[in-house]
Image (cartoon, rainbow, N blue to C red; front, top):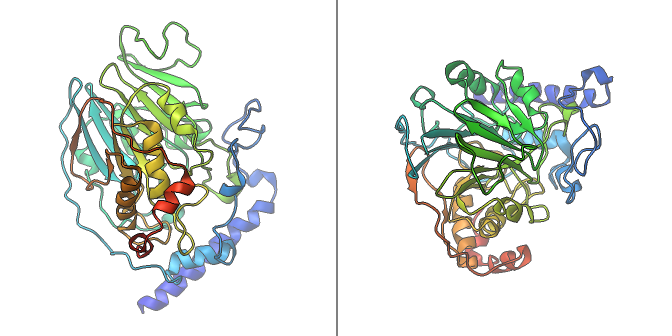
Amino acid sequence: MAFAFKIIGGVLLLLIVAAGLAVTIAPRFLDRIYYRGDASDHYDGERFFNPDKDEDTLRVPPGRGGRAGFFWRQFTGSDGRPAWPASVPVAASKPAARVEGERMVVTWIGHASVLIQTQGLNILTDPVYADRAGPMGFGPKRVAAPGVAFDDLPRIDLVLVSHNHYDHLDQATLKRLWQRDRPQIVTSLGNDSVIGQTGAKAIALDWGGNATLTAAGLKDTSTDIRCDPDSWCPGDRARVFITRNHHWGSRWFTDRNRALWSSFVIALPSGGNVFFAGDTGFGDGLWPAEAAAYGPVRFAMIPIGAFRFAPGQMSSGSHIGPAEAALVHQRLGAARSLAIHWGTFRLSYEGYDTPPRMLAAAMRCTGGTGFAAAAIGVPFEVAPYAKPQTGKPLEPAAMLACMDTPAVKALH
C-alpha cells in the first residue's frame, strides 16, 4: 500500500513538473517579474547572471536523464543513493533573550538557518521552519527538527535572506516572524517582492550595497557618505553589506534568475565581522576575498552539502562541496566558521554524514584551523576575532589532488 501511494505521488509530481515545463514556453503573463532596473555586469535588464561564468548553474545535473528524470529519481530515491536516516535526534535549546557586548553565542537551527546573538542583537539567517523544502507541500522532507523551536526564538531584530529557493526563503516562517517581531529584513534585488507576498517588508539591495541598523530601524546607506565602512555614526548598531557569491534563483520554472542571490557581511562595532555565504558555488573563487575586504571575519557560515549529483562528484556549479568550502574559509581569513547546508534536507546524493567527514579531510589538506561542523540546536560561543592559522594556500586542483585518497573515495 505504501509503495502504491509512493507511485501515485510520483505520478502527481511528474504531472506538476510537466506543467511547469510547459509554462516555460507559455505566454508571458505566466512569468513572474520581481525586479526592474538598469542593466549591469550581472543583470541584462530582464534576468540576473553570474559575471564570472554562468553556464555551470544553468545545466541539469549531469548523468540524470533530463530534468523530468532528475525529479523522478529525487522523489523516489531510485538512483542508488546511499540511505539517509528518516530522522535524527536533535538536542533543541532555548536561547537567552539577549547576549550583550562583544560576547557572541551561535545556534545552528538547521540547514542555512542560524541564530547569532551579540551586541544585544538577535540575527537570523535564511529562516526555514517548513517540514518540506518545496512548493505546494512537495520537496525534500526535513530529517532534523529545528534546533530552536519557533516559539522559543528570542525576539528577532535582523533577518538575512540570501535568495528565493524554497530551502532558504520560507514564506510561512517569514510571515510568522513578521507578525510576531517585525524584524528588519535585508535581501538582494527582487526577493523583496517574494517576501512582500507574506505582508512582510524587506530592504532589497544590489551587490555592493549596504544598510545600517540603528535604534530607529534599518536604512539603505549604499549612497550615504556620512560614514564609511571603517567608522561608525552615533546610534549605529550594525551594517549589512550585500556581497557577491555564485548561484541562481527561482520559485517556479518561468522565473529563473528574476531575483538576485547574494552573500552578506555584517559589520559590528567591535569584535570582528560576521559572514553568511548563503547558497553558492565556487565560481571564480574571488568573492570570499571581496567580502573579507570589509574587515576581519570573526565568524562565517559556509555551506558544505548538496554537492554530489553524480558518482564521485566533489562540487556542482551552484553548490560548493567540503573541498571548496575549506578554500572559502581560507580565503575569507575567517577565525571561526560553521558548516551549514547539510544534514537537514536531502537535496543531492551524498551520504548523510559525508559532508562533515570530507570537510575534516579538506581542513587537514590546508593545515588551517577553525572550520568544522556543529550539532543542531547546541549553542556555542565565538571568541572575538584573532588572526587565525589559515594554513597553506591551495587552488581547487591541488585540494582535489590532496583529497584523492582511499579514505575520501570511500565516502559516498
